[in-house]
Image 1: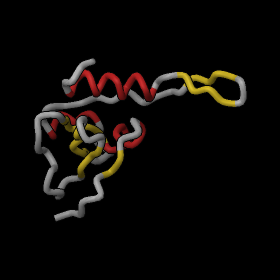
Image 2: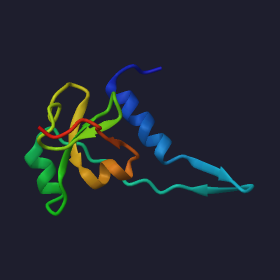
Image 3: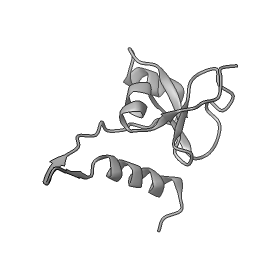
Image 4: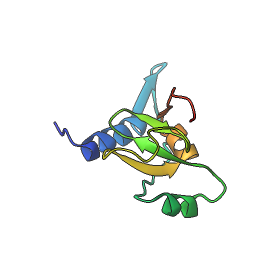
Length: 97
């Protein structure tokens, strides 16, 4: 079992693209690929019409700009907000500051 953030990230991506069983038939789930960036401006160039969020892989949540934990920690990356939502990550319940 991998304990690193990278291993957990791969596990989440594999889970999001796994096969779902229902009503006796198997259906493929199409997951949006997650493109993590080290710097905020790189992520903004990747998705110019979307907001950039800080995705904490360890906690499985993302933070919007203005939140205290935005851009903090070693187990995270800047990503597009739509990719984070489509990747089944949750928005942080902490308010904006």
